[in-house]
Amino acid sequence: MAAADLTTHPGHLARRLQQAHYLLWNTMVSEEITSPQFAVLNTLVAEPGLDQRTVGERVGLDRSTIAEVISRLGRRGLLDKVRDPEDGRRFLLRLTDEGLRTHRKLTVRTARMNQVFLAPLTAEERTVFFDLIRRVSDAAEGLRNPGESLVAPG
Amino acid sequence: MAAADLTTHPGHLARRLQQAHYLLWNTMVSEEITSPQFAVLNTLVAEPGLDQRTVGERVGLDRSTIAEVISRLGRRGLLDKVRDPEDGRRFLLRLTDEGLRTHRKLTVRTARMNQVFLAPLTAEERTVFFDLIRRVSDAAEGLRNPGESLVAPG
DNA sequence: GGGTATTGTTCAGTGCACCGACGAATACGA
DNA sequence: TCGTATTCGTCGGTGCACTGAACAATACCC
Image (cartoon, each protein chain N blue to C red):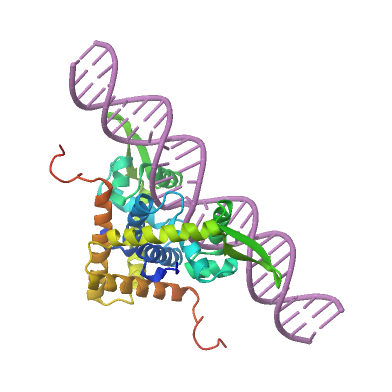
């Protein structure tokens, strides 16, 4: 059987896109704080006091991964975890002052980086770019829990 | 400072897209062979006897990562490494019969998976989707080695 | 109120992905 | 030809990402 052309394989393209982003992030935004870590900071700016699982849901990370990311942010002193007094299973998360400062600083740099990253595209193309990726991702995500947002199951 | 909207951040979208793909791959293609591993098999079908670094270049992986991927494929008996008699630094890579069989089987499944993954998009949208992602990735990759493919430096 | 189910977190295991440093082999230049 | 530079592969370290299993706390139902 002949070899396939990887440039028409969305998975391959998705990986390359993420690598390209990773690279640019490292040079233009931060070598310490990663993009997923920034996503967590950003979520906690919008909604302070969320529990760990919900933060993971917001940024699209599973339980194990979000636990590690949060542990790193905690070690760096960017957020605090406290047990929820109303539900002993949860930890409530809140940014420290240092965490807020870091978020503010990185927000500026991230905006600059996105400009560079998207520079090859026109304004209309960027809109299409976002729309197409979101539609594909959402559809695949929907295949994960069949019937999740449909009528109540049997 | 207000929190940013992650749905307009290409890095966040790229990560989500790759996760969605990873998920679908796992359920529709293989739980043992991953997408990067398939990319390596595919490259060696097209160009048997490549050395490790070149394979990495073809699929977009750095030396460390490609070494691990190839080591796993070797452990599974899907490829062989032999020292290049003409250049003792290199290992030449070649698929085993088992590797060829695996590639053939996964090629079929991968095509099916891509159909499902891209189902939300029309034929024209898929073309645009590929084009936009490639342009952004290529441009970012180009920022990595400034002047690499330009006129001779200095 | 007590047993069962669910939920939040953690842990172990696997795999991708990067960087920087190292050793071995080769290529090049004085 | 000899020394330096480059190149290929490896190794150690960090971080993301998933699964499955374990554990504790809570919720629910008889």
